[in-house]
Length: 490
Image 1 (cartoon, rainbow, N blue to C red):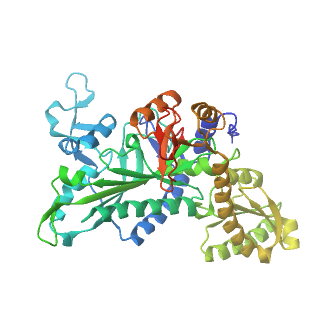
Image 2 (cartoon, rainbow, N blue to C red):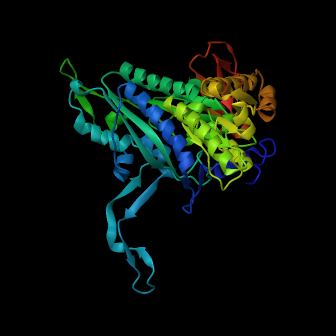
Image 3 (tube, rainbow, N blue to C red):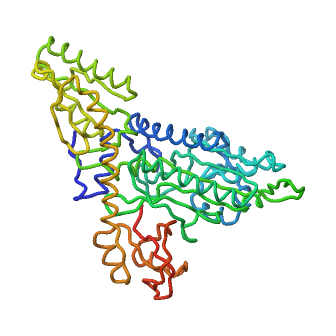
């Protein structure tokens, strides 16, 4: 296998090589789309399984809505259609035919759709048109629905997992009787995303609200979690939108109140996508390959037997099978790699590349001594451990790896979060160590756009725990009531 380009040499190239060489995904012949390979999909499935359980624990149910959206629906909410118009794929015909002159396959001109269909970029419009038939009374509320689906947003510059024309995600769409209930829902789901990111992905995040310019098209407020990658760039890892009554008004979704009056429904939507795969890679991985937090690893432990003779192979594999069975009994995914077509050195490198958290090796001498060699993927540390103690040792090690990956990522974020008070400081930090920059902003979209044009840095969020602090905007010099979080971002 080819050696990865180092992160220091070319971070972007390192990322692209790692995704492909670790068998996570590959580019498709369909421009801008990707094939997620089984190992990559196993990680995504684990993410999906955990998140799905968290959604259901908070009262949500799964449903499914059409991939195709009538074009007229998109025009009902002006800000929404403006936000997505440039990314929409449009279906105009429903049949192909052989060209009578050339024999080539062409679109049948007689098969034009009466109304063109948009391939789902997000589902607010189709869902709120559906909710109109579901909601008549306050007794029908709240509706707490999530769907797991694919969406299409026509991207010209793509990168596996981070930005592709088609990607996988979940999108929650909820309906409520009051403004406060909807805001509570939006913030509750933000907390769910933050818990998942920190406790499962071992990725620290900042919870905040987007500026008006960065807000989701059609929302009154967009809440977000922002993470910092190893290269000093930010990544938006999840969003939760308070939609107010915008979509209910656009689709005339009203309900009879307890008092007998009519009121428009209050709404939220929220989602995370396969972008989380990119975040996972760039938060923890190193120049040798993937580093996976144990809670999301498809394989927690791999046992690699080392032997010279068939008798040695049988004896070592027997012990390996016993250890793997014991770990499986504890709820872990353990693999005995007894493939005799590959050398142990090749296996070590392969599992290192794929980020398996713990590797166990046992050879003839270990067999005699009743020991195994246990190696941590994240630090590379190795230790000889009595075989009879190996199971408990590995279980504790997996817990420790999960904790220490989070601590390492948090320390990196702290070290790369800088408070500045002047425009010169801002530019110096941004072009130097990068990372998050805490700075005063005057609250205007005009200033925000000028900063973005000058530096490519954007306001990642206004932190929810922002402290009120009188100051001066770093760019305009106008009064500011608090610091916001700037960064260059993916």
